[in-house]
Length: 99
Image (cartoon, rainbow, N blue to C red; front, top):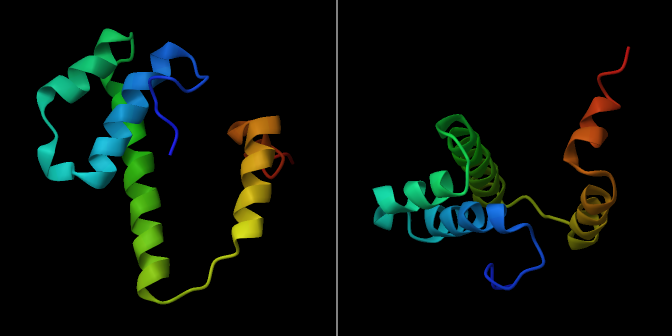
C-alpha cells in the first residue's frame, strides 16, 4: 500500500484518504479530529459526506459480492483503474447519459 503522505497526489486529498483508510479499517476509532483534518484542507461538510457515502457504497457492494461468493476478475479491475486515471471517473459515466 502506498503511503498517503508520500503519494504523488494533491496535498488537499491527503486527509481525505487518511479519513477513508481509518473509516475502512478501524471505523470504531473515528473521532472529530479526523473530520477536522479534512475541513482544515478546505473541504466542507458536504464534501466529507460525499466521501463517506462513496466509502459506504463500496464497502456494501464488496461485502455483498464477497458474501455471495461472486468471483472477481483482477484484470478487469486493473483495466478499469487505468481508464479512471486516463479519463477520470465522471467522463466515463457522462458517456452513458448522453441522449
